Length: 178
Image: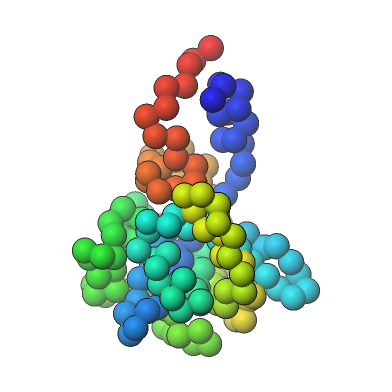
């Protein structure tokens, strides 16, 4: 990969979200940066999830998910809870957390969230290491006013790192410094 290509890819802007789903009476969630609107009529969104993320299994099974838009006020400890440990080994909903279920039955996380969307998967696209879930929005609400957390803010102000399953992760790639 060239320096210019690497830098160009880094210009793509992202938000940060808690994406949750359900499977056989259990909840799981993760931090994602790839929720985006793809249609306004009908309201459709898509999300990219690494195939080896535990939540991928939940969304594939239940065909539903929620996406809570995180605030810039979200602390790293909260991001770590959903972003740096697997739900296979840790119940992310065990410790106190403010969440509810509505239309889809998938949990909606309120902690540090500005709003949420509930969605039902209508199609999937195999994207190599990730699956793109294309979904119809069936619910949503504004929780509070604030500034959405962007990936740029996460990296520059919170000094956050890219997990290896993130679509933006380049691994141990050596990028020349020009």
